[in-house]
Image (cartoon, rainbow, N blue to C red; front, side):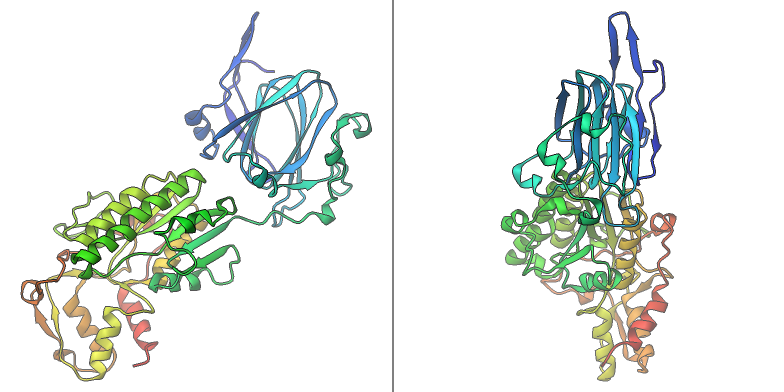
Length: 469
């Protein structure tokens, strides 16, 4: 081993498989190394994979071979003694299926092996021991998710330094299938919760044709039910998109609504965050402009929450819970418009009837079309944007609800002067929840990732054209 080297990593031909050089410090007594140091490893390129179990494999004699196993977790492998020849084969579905990488490891090297990459080791010295961290607990149930490849497969053709017929190999490892008969490890999936709502419908369109994205309405997965969580094999998933929410803002001010809002918007999100932490998942959670009191003209992502009503309070609590997950995107929206019941559809229906509604003229913001929220979420996930909170509404100039209603009337061919202004104080009834005065969200964060939401006026015109009144 080379002493005095710097910690560094290098990529390999297999995506995600990283080879590390570890600093080893030695003298006449022996040597010492930091086998795993989270902060330093992250700086060197190791994913924050959240190890939960440490295992050691001791091999008594030179020529011991451990078979090519693709396991349902990520692992970080390094040597405590001896020397090995390692062979890694990509057994995940995709264009690199069957690709081989080999390297010799001493205590001065380590390797990060992502889920689905088969790994095998041949010891080159007696008394070789290696240790490995994994980010899920081994169990007999988990072993059912292993994928195997025969050590002597002719297509992959691992160049073993010691011929296999001179090696110690277990009976099961000698019986594993050739590459042609290996079923590729499927990619981990994304689970969309609340998939039957306005945003859920938008997400179905945004991810149309992507077989790795699953959609679950409340009938399949109730985020408030512990049974729903226990029924899922979370090892098969990489991300959760939580589009489920209690959104009846005024009903949330009633005793029954208050309990429902806190159950769905806060307590259930805490359970989702715990699931994300336990299984190293990415959690995408939808936030709201209602977490603010609206006193700021424009709301930044790092503005402290100051909700006015029960709905906003429950959403703010959910945001705090979601932020516990190391891999999280909190996507904050305002004035959502999609396939379900919403303000634009209501105004268009009134315009078609020649009605003359009163609409508040002292609350302003921007519309957020569900299709663009969904596209933004897809962008964050596919581009692996930095984790954190992102404001996401449509762009353009802010408007009041009154101005927006007039635009809807004009676009459907009705007289916009039929819409009459009213102040919030005069409009509000005894059971009306308080609303933020300004719901304008700063969009510089999402734009910095390369996603620029279209102007709200453009999307409004397109939406109106598609309505059947």
